[in-house]
Image (cartoon, rainbow, N blue to C red; front, side):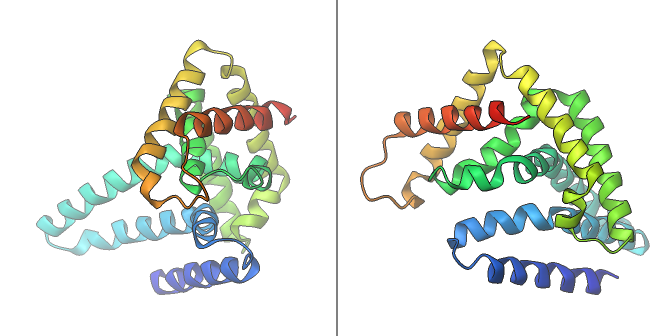
Length: 213
């Protein structure tokens, strides 16, 4: 099963690259990450299961590695679902540095709270598991009625918290930190103004989210 799943992931990435040849490599990478996350999570789960027969030392090492990856991925999982399902096409038109897109996805975890996040994550995982058993790919699962219902639920929770005093500060700080870390890799015709870019990214993202119903 693992070998087949690896091949499915490769084919999925190649198809995304082929269907989106007009995008930059960074944009193709982000889109591939969004579309294959569930498949990678499944591959990781299978890897964890197969390790049960290994020696204790290797098993413990694998569990620690999987635990860290799972913790990191869970903080982006719902956000990625939210980003791609609702505003991916619109946000690509803003001409923002690609490195900022994951910041918007991760912001969902901090904005809607741990309890809501875990509940939504469980719903998404169950939907993906059901859809994959039926032979549906990630895009078809997201476009399904249950997928759109979950995305709307995330949107409602997110919009309810956007008026809090901490929302703007946290998101702008995250955008600023990401730009500073990646500024040497950002292609621009002129010198990038970090403060101006952060302000534009925040305002345009907020405008997109609040316009969705």
